[in-house]
Image (cartoon, rainbow over all chains, first blue to last red; front, side):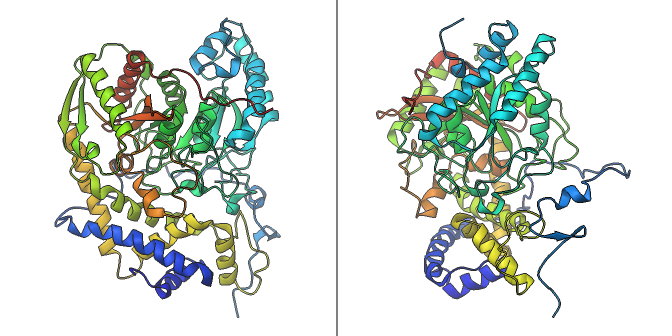
Length: 95
Length: 494
């Protein structure tokens, strides 16, 4: 297999995902098949080829350094799962 | 007036009828809403319907028309894919993660449609976060192909294509990251355009793979697609990758005469294993039609075609894993409220329950490709192959104006056929995703039917910002070939 269940578990942890024990084998198998297919890229000679991040050339997009309006605080908090006194609320982060 | 029901009018036919005062926008909208009531139970194209706001917009459109202030889309009932932000309506991305999300702002394309006086009838179904080629990855429903309801409509903009094919809107918007407009348009027998990267603002488009995503129109014919593209294209300072170039009046260049047009046919596409002979036949007939109309059809090569799928399925998931990191249960969207112990647990539980299997697979693939020790072998290598793909197109466009090919290797496949086999699903994108890698525009226009009555699309790809050339070629083909005989056999279910 191209990728082990341990590796899947590790990568899932990096991505803040939890894969149920019952799904681990299936995910490892499916990802393995895709990674095996992707191996074919190794046969392409890319020596000295500059990578493309964006296909259409653009210059840096700068705007004038002027104050502009932004989302009102109340409006920005409307979709928050939990908020209080104008803040987003999360579970405790300090021991 | 013809005896066509109003919902079956094209955008340009409806425009004429509205401006001549033969029909009102309110009547047109009512007709489309009734049609939705009749056939939506069989098709499942929509996630959200907005009849109340649609009726209000139609009334406003009627006032604008009475005051002779109507533009091309005033009073035209449209649908948009449910990853385009609408401040009055939920924008779910077909994901549990955003099931209750109402954006605090409109996407630029929505602002443009609103300013044009268009009527929004609903938000269409899609693969979750646009990841898929069949619309089976929606968290909410499976959209059926109006030509055969046992088959997929294509994806990821399957709802937008099916809604147009089933006359549940006069036109729609989709998004295309690797073929997600062109492939469903092909499978549903309608026209779909992926514009040049940077042609249409992505502001307010929920991001999947930011260097590949592009919003584009889906419509019943080429002229309507051009009308929609003219309305949504243009520079937007809120999208830093938007390009500041004037938007041509595409329709003014439409003409029957295509002599002088050089069409390149990439031999790698036609030699692809798995290309269905019926699809190949329909495409070859299209080549003959172009040739007899006076176009020069030449053999070209896009040598890195068969590495495009592998490169794409590194670049796109890598960008997705980064983009989707924002769904953390804090600022908006779903949170698993039962995870109260610490922040990491809340993140992990929220993301594991909020994302479906394909989204999780792609996040894992992307995270793996970007993780320490693998970056050079995967992401960097794929980005270098991307350069080679881009160079393939640049070389080809020195020899031809337009590249002609199939859109997908087969017509619409049965629901469930590839659901458990991600690689087979990915390989169905082989003819479309190169255009996203190279940033060039492409479209799908119907070119025939299989023996079992499924539509087959023809792909025309152009150089950067050559939407005009591919639209012109497609329009001329549509006039000459006349393949758009008939409508889906869909019968009202009530």
